[in-house]
Length: 204
Image (cartoon, rainbow, N blue to C red; front, side, top):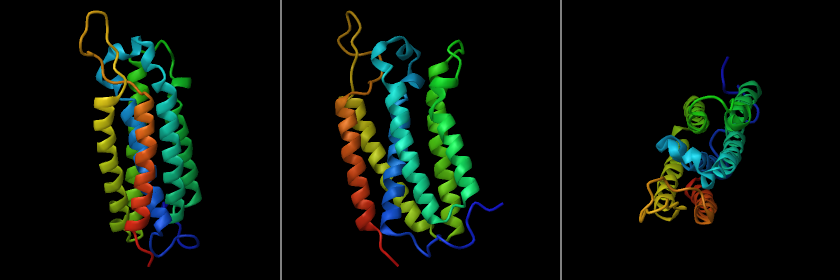
């Protein structure tokens, strides 16, 4: 079964809006995965209350990104059945904090890993679909925009994310946690990525 719809809504080329959606959706997917990385980098993060907000905010950011990305894939020609399958997988992956047993070892690390795997899956499907439609160039441009913005956010998150200082510490031994600065940077970069995706692509 092909993931591409043989006719109908699939355009001959990616519209500016679709490229912008792919770029901004991909960036938000990366942002959500990035914000969950403290649970992968340091097991002590799951013992500190300041990190618990990540369990709710990071999946929400990834969910918004995945919805934008899936809508763009639909415009690109993704057929209904694969779209619905991806949507189910996506929701399951991003709600791991609800269904993964509390007693499971490394529960928080598994939740973070599921977010990252979800982003990778959507990027792979996007690459395959764009290749099948002969639109690898515009898709790659959207991916580059998402990656560049994701790298910029990683730098901002590292230097300006929340820092928890344990008693006696002068520099934090834990990774940064999600704070207002990181959230505002995410919003600003998502807008910038969308605008760049819009103006750098061309209607054909």
